[in-house]
Structures are given as C-alpha cells and as structure tokens.
Image (cartoon, helix red, strand yellow):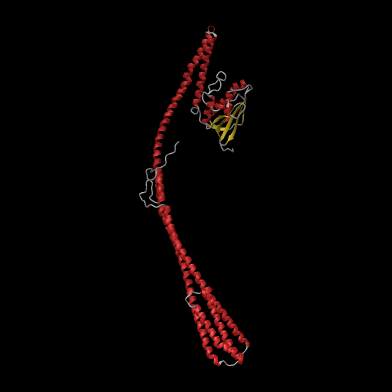
Length: 523
C-alpha cells in the first residue's frame, strides 16, 4: 500500500513582519540581559569604590590620626620631662624625655609609611614635615639647651628659656592641630565616599530587582499574547471541527510557529475531508458489493443444493444401469466389455465422491453453527467413531494428550481430526498404524500435532500437499480426490490458526496446526 503524498508547502505569509516565537524571546532576553549587565556593572563599580573608600578610611586615615595623637602625647611628655629635668636634675626625667623623642619619631615614621595610601592633594606629607620641623626647632632652641646647662651647672630656674619654649611649643601645637584638622577632612571625605558607594549598591540592587520584575511581567505578556491567546483560538477552532463543523477553517496569525502549525493542521483537515468523502463513497460501493456478494452466495448455495441432488441423481442412474447391463448380459459380454463397465461404474462413484468433497470444501465458514466454546477431545472422539470400521480393519492405535477447550465449530473440527487420522490410516506402512494427537501451549495459541508411523511426505512437497486437487501418488495406489488437506487448511484458517507439515521428522508424517486459546497463558 503506497503512502499518501506529503502536504504541499504553505503559501508565504501575507504579513512579512510576523516574528517567530523564538525571536520574541531573543529580543526580550537581549533587553533584559543588557539592563542586567548595566546594573551588575554599576554594582561592581560601586563595590570597588566602596572598597577603596573603606580601605582608605580604615587602613590609612584613621591610623594616621592615631599616630598624630601619639606624636602629640610624645611631644607633651617631652616638654614636661625636660622641664622637670631642668628644675631637679633627676635622671628619670631625662630618660622620659628621650623615650618621648623615640615615641615621636616612631609615630612620625608610621605616618610617613601611610602617606602613599592617603588621597593626594591634601598636603599630608607637607604637614608632616611641618610638624617635624617644629619639634626639631623646639628641641634645638629649648630642650637641648636645658639639658646642656643642667649637665654643666646643675638644676636651676628656666626663666630665661621660657619665652623660647612658649614660642616653639605653640608652633608644634599649631602644626598638630592643622594635621588633625586635615585628617578629619580626609575622614569625612572617605566616609562620604563609603556611604555614597553603599547607596549606589542599594539603588543598583533595587533597580536590578525592578528590572527582573519588569522582565517577568514582559515575558508573561509575550507568552500571553504570542502563545496563550493564539493556542486558545486554535483550540476553539479545533473543538469546532471536532464537534462536527468540518468546513470550519483553522488558522492563527501569530506567532510564526503557530501560524505554520495551524496551516498544516488545516491542510490535514482538508485532506481528511477529501479522504473521508472518498472513503464514504468507497464504503457505499463496498456495501453494494457486499449486498451483491450475499446475493451471489445465495445463488451459490442454491447451485450447491442443485449439484448435491440434481447432478448426483444422473450419476447414480449411470452407475445403476451400467451394473444392470453387466448382470443381465454378463453371458454375452467378454472380459474387455466387463472391464469397460467397471471403469464406468468407478468413474461415476468417483464423480459422486468428488462432488461431495467439493461441497464440503465450499461449505466451510458458510454453513453450520456459530463458533462456541467446546472440548476438542469431544471432536476427536466423534472423528474416531466415524472411523471405527477402518480403525478395526487396519488394527490402528490412536492415542492423544489431554486436549483443551477452544472456541470453534464442532462439526468442522471433527472433520479436521477425521481427515488427518484418515490420511494416517491411508498412507500407512507395513506395521499397524500408530497415531498420536498431541498439544502444547504456545503463548495465546494451542499448537496441536498429529503424528503417525506411515510412509511420510517428502519435505519438498510440504506446501504443495495443502493445495486443492494436488496428489503425490497414483489414484490406483492411494484413492482419494486430493481435497482432504486443502479442506483441513481451510478449516484451521477459518478458526484463526495455521497448519503446516513438520519437515524435521525422520519417520512417518507429523502435521501441526494452531488454534486460539482461551484465558491467560498461565491458566
């Protein structure tokens, strides 16, 4: 059976601007991605700026302010210690002074190391030099002269150096105040940058969340407009067709995928309508042919009735009158004439037998009861009763397995067993015939077999023997019409099975056939 031709391609869309669904999502995704990249970049820049501001504030400005306080405490300690040393001359004051100088220089070095990390343009380095110059001048003009004089002359009043001390120490305080004010401004600037960075991060995150919400809403609108609504329209159209409105055309305008899909569905609808109309016409023709076939079968049955009565009656007369001729004129006939009369009688009887076999063959599936659940053992028993005389004559032995129940025609299955056993008796060997009917379950079928110890069948004739009127032996050696196995095949096929010759047997002949089983295989 040839497959139907494919549907013709769709005509180009009247709307050239129709976008495919993938394009809609690509455009929406590209816009969302762009906004997302901008928001993430802003967040990263704000994080970088915030990190720098925090690093400047925590790692540079605040430590510099602390070191400036150390310088102020160290200078204050130096001034008090040098005054006490000048007035008392005790060594502990001198040691305290020198310890303060060391502390001042350590703090100054620490600030010098922090200067590169501080923002440029605020003059921290210059102001640090101013503090160093002021402390150096104070020690040069006040502290060192006090130490030299005390070491030479001993302790005493410091009235003559008080003015110098006041001036130089005031310069130190002024430089330190300036430094503290400068670091305070740097602290405020770094703090503002830190707050600004966090605000920027908060705004960028809020904007990103807003963009994601808008993207979700936008994608939902796209799905609703480009997918949900067109699918709903197409669904309504398909339901209308399914409800019986077969002339209802299918089609949606967007997106391109659904437009193409609806076009193909509509093409299939049109083809189905065409095929349905053709099928309806074909069913009408089949109905008319079936009615004609029924009429023809009725005529054939009438013909079979005529053949079984009107054709056999002349044959019986021919045989009867021929035998009467032989009886009345036997003394006037020679051997050749009597031989001719025997040929005529035998031909008439064989013609009767052939007519009866043809009638049996034609009746399979047409005449008889409906298939019903039956025991195949009963069918075999009926066949053996019909063959009882021949079984006794040939001394045959027939055995069988426990035969199952099937759904079939009792008369036909009895005829099947009878033909197969009859063939085993006909084509027997020198020993008395032994016939065995076996059965086994094969899935949802019963596989039967009929085995004998007769002359067997050449495997090359395995298919030929089931054809009507096919004989493998001369009629004078093995009588018959050549219809028996053909009738068996027709009976088996009528019941939904198949029959074949088992070509693997070395002795005798084994015929196998299948019949549908009842129930599950495990039962």
